[in-house]
Length: 232
Image 1 (cartoon, rainbow, N blue to C red):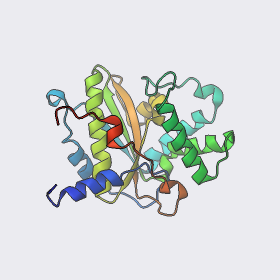
Image 2: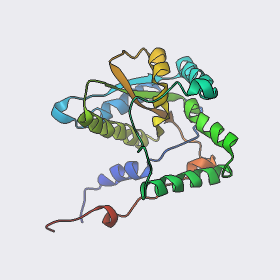
Image 3: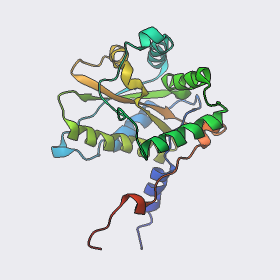
């Protein structure tokens, strides 16, 4: 198939995107983040509703959010009081989804040298989510809670655009639903109004090329496993 040459740049940005779990301290300028969001806003949405609201943190506000969440996360009793406002994962796991989940978890821990059952190190690694994996920029994505499921589907396309646009600019990301249980803390720090619901967070910055966890590239099912062509 003869495609325009420019498709390779798009393909490279999509295929090159992966979840980075250790960033360099190198800063990212506000103008770059604005440029990424300007591209991402071209995501499609039903009747052009554009349901996304974004809060971008760096510097002291980012540290404040990290500190406040970690204080809760490291207190088992207090942590139980914080729950996400929507279901992200199934209530009961089943194949093939539980198998894929386990595969990526085992692969990540193997790269980090975390043995199965090492609860202390697993807890410490999970805590790194709330440090934005050392990234200089954190994004919080919110949606008006009065909107319905279709707007959440639209939102996924917007978040994907953010990650691909970042990759096209030599930056990396990690989308993080791990922030969802701490929506009250996030709302206080960023000034989120009551009618908004936290969707997820995201780390943004330059990947640390020497970090073993950043060498993890997850598999994808081949097209023939999830596609039926009808009428071809």
